[in-house]
Length: 391
Image (cartoon, rainbow, N blue to C red; front, side, top):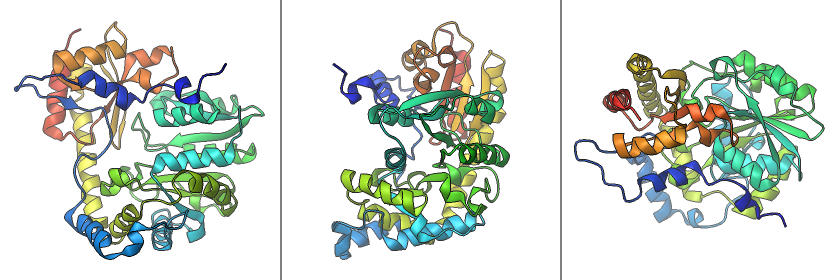
């Protein structure tokens, strides 16, 4: 008898890693450095919090069901923002609001795939994508990245079968941090279009991309929505993680199918979260530019300080947005080292094996460092501890 699908997939790495520190006591002079999770740890700016409070107190609709695909003002504002950022013409009806970006991915898969279908995922992969495919009865086909932690379209094409329904890209990438060049994204679009597949592009971290202007020209194509399904999150931009507000851009036909899924799961996105996201779009662009500057400063701190670790045999494989992806020099597998780092160096970071197919040897050599909540001083401390560590 087949296992229930939740039993057939793995435990979330975030949940698993929290067990490693549960009940642990860290020395006062060596507090825990948590570089395991890519989520803002601070509250939204006061103005946004006031907007949430005002909506909760004064807007009756904030407590009622809303449209399944999200409120019209937020959809319109996001369509306008996308149009400006990508120098394109996005229509309101091509945008929907979801209960977080993970739900946007789940809705896309529900609209695209049937039992036993296949989706190509570059590896290292974002673990929740793999988890959802497992639970949806869809086969995740691993596409191993090459130089610069970038996937190759030719390698992806070799994996396509008659059951393939989509290719997924995450840029800036989670877990590797790398920003996919426009030419690479365009090549994947052409591959997907020519083979009759969907291209799902998750740009959760687009607000922290180091490039000025549009990172790609996909939205400028007149037929973009026949192939592209675009995912976005307000969580990182405006510190709205607890309010679960994401977004999806796609064709009206695909939106019709996704609406069935969304209506069944949450009925509508959080009304308060949508109020916060709309206020953020309208009022926080200058503040967000400052947040981006700080993240880019921390990225620079990773790159500037890494020679200390390189001298000990570590390798920096990728860096950008919220993440650095590294290779360690030790003989033991990364998960074993990760647990030792908690006990001996007060560091919590995720091993590469949590972003890889089971048994993949590359995962035993690698770690993800999520640095969004660690400033330059903290990054220096992290590198000092790692340089001194010897399992």
